[in-house]
Image (cartoon, rainbow, N blue to C red):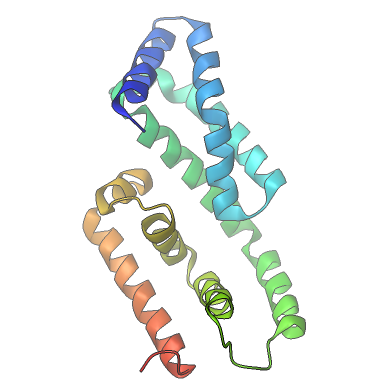
Length: 184
């Protein structure tokens, strides 16, 4: 997000903290779609992502008054969305795993992938088999192109922890691809 938008968000937060209810409406207008998209990106469930975004707004509204640095609204709010999405994923992981196992049983490719698109599908499947924390790090770093520091801020952890999750995720993916002879 550019500096102008960041400054506008900071001003809106300060206005809301001063009692201007319209400032919150403007924050919702500016951020709700992004919250839904981020939640969907993690959950791959459109209905759940809308619920997560709404639940995130409830938390934001109850805690925004105590936000000490309004300039950190973006990372603070996105951290809330990510936490809510991760909570939803953990609570639904058993059902999701059963469904994935069912699909894998009936959708398994019998041939080795021969083109880039097929390899991408295999890679995506391998990423989805990683622990949730490692999936999150991989997606934020490689897909969303967040920096290590930004990921640490979003997930409320140190850069070292982010690096560790990325390292272990890459190592697991390397092993899977070596076992499938995609890497020499």
